[in-house]
Image (spheres, helix red, strand yellow):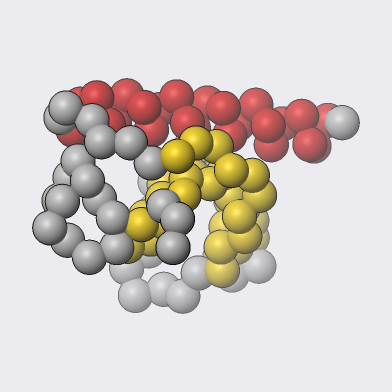
Length: 94
């Protein structure tokens, strides 16, 4: 399977939230870990442990990369989030 990073809409209790998702290994955070699905909500802080979520990929953003450290990874996630916001806003406005 290809490692993908998507902009997404996430549905929790019939409410959609914007976010970004990584599907695949975690080469920067834990290279030995198995592949995983990681979701970062945009502009929301919630505890979602144990909840079942429906995730709808909307657009491919970029291929997965390995960063020199977690600070660089975090900075890139911020850029990905900004790109996702712009695309989702254009879909709402357009």
